[in-house]
Image 1 (cartoon, rainbow, N blue to C red):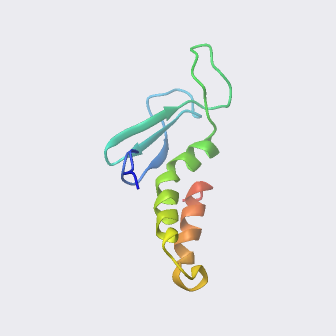
Image 2: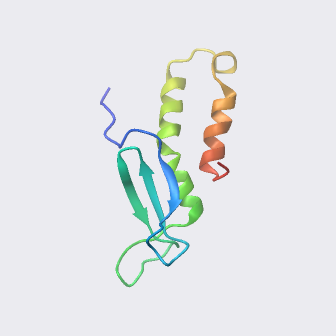
Length: 98
């Protein structure tokens, strides 16, 4: 199995404080900035693709979803051996409820 090449750590979706557009988002981790997205799903004049707040929340939950799926990979009995509260917590983060 190959090693993970993404930025490790907790990812968070935050409004970009240095922007005058409340729809600009930055994804951060304890390692620093993972990515910066601007606020809608269209190509801007400066040639950047932009994403919505909901997309930013989903992206910030990606490492948590990856870790959860990795845990589930070796489980024989999902009903008994999976922490379903953790599953709901990851889904809640992806929906932007945290």
